[in-house]
Image (cartoon, rainbow, N blue to C red; front, top):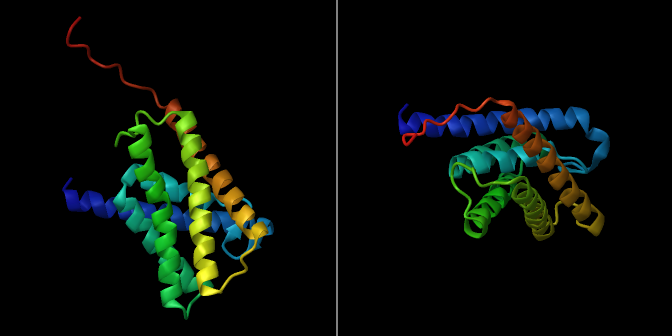
Length: 186
């Protein structure tokens, strides 16, 4: 597979997973919404972190594109600059956590050394980073209610959503049988 096809596939998969999870979250957790975009359980947060961990910058691009589509179509149709800012924040928050994990944990590209404990640290760091950046953007633009309650709701929703998604994926991966490694030195 050529490099370009692989990169386009990673972006496309990120867009599709994010849009699908956003629709699922809207159906399942509408009652847990503090205000549009701030939920006490937010599964798309887990997809944002997952795609970034798996695909790096290509996941970031996919998340940014999906967020731009969602914000301009459903939440802020006439506010392209505001939507672009939200898209940037949504995509960059997991990337900052990814870069931090690579630096502090020596996170391998294969994610082989991403233990359950380190994964939990990434989820918490992501929830705090994402919520902080989103609320800063809300405050800067004076377009959404910024309060301690909305910040706590978003932190909680992002952490819980990330934990649910990432630990489900981790459990599913554990069910896949591993091929025995050939040992060249018997």
